[in-house]
Image 1 (tube, helix red, strand yellow):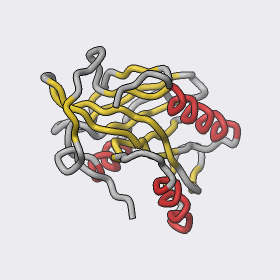
Image 2 (cartoon, one colour):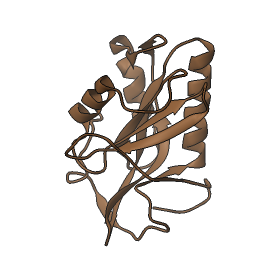
Image 3 (spheres, rainbow, N blue to C red):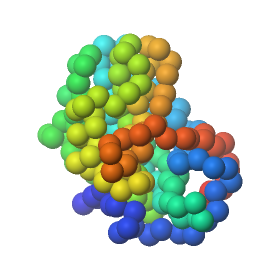
Length: 172
């Protein structure tokens, strides 16, 4: 069964970043998130999923590369979302079907028309799963067409820098 792995437990490879950013996303992962959030917005419902990728280290510290996203059935409305516990098998199957050695480096969720920020509930959820500096939360507001990424810190999630890579760019 998959589990969230702190980068200190994961396979961390030494690799210099192409540019100074906290997290890199494949273009297809971002497109999947946008499509999921747009579909949710059309149903007046928030969405969420997990960010699967790799963790690297260079002289500036650790950073993550998101290659794919996974999700499953959700229980959601216009102001809240959570995984449907009765559909967790689908989530685990989606993780098992990934064709690379991954780490869950974070999660994504949407807000509908209120902007991109980490609410108190979001921060508590994030802190319960990610405590080190490579735990990320992407927040998307499809109505406002905004997207922001937040990084774990000892003081709670802080806004992070991100780069979206062409799917043909080789990072790992």
